[in-house]
Amino acid sequence: MILVEPDVLLTEASRLPGLDGQKMSKSYNNTIGLREDAATVTRKIRTMPTDPARVKRNDPGDPAKCPVWQFHLAYSDQETKEWVQRGCRSAGIGCLDCKQPVIDAVLAEQAPMRERAQRYLDDPTLVKNIAADGCDKARELARETMREVREVMGLAYS
Ligand code: SF4
Image (tube, rainbow, N blue to C red; front, top):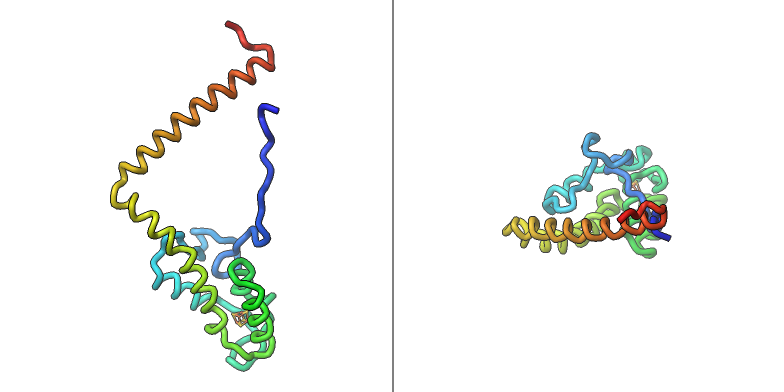
């Protein structure tokens, strides 16, 4: 096999919706940036819409109708997910309580990204060098693959 057909590699929560439950898109203004600052991320998640049935704190809700639940599916362990299911349906927890584990998980996920990126922000030539090295490697691999393709197709004139 020379040209391998790519296949998908999906995790259980393979698609994360936007903060409003729609497709995540910059033009919908419903995204979280990978290195967005902690205060903005916190504000964005705290203001996410929830199940419209939960008008008041003591109105029960349904996680299936709430975009925050999609984030719990991606970020929370089983115990937290059960806490959300129970607490939402019984109005035992408020929506801000429910959002806090998501905020904590997103910030924890972003922390090492911010840290790793800082080195490259401080010295952008590191990025240029990595891109140049990558180009060299890709060019070499492409040359080799095309040589094999020509050979298999009987186009290897020399
Ligand atoms: S408690 Fe959680 S799942 Fe239920 S409506 Fe509020 S934010 Fe959504």
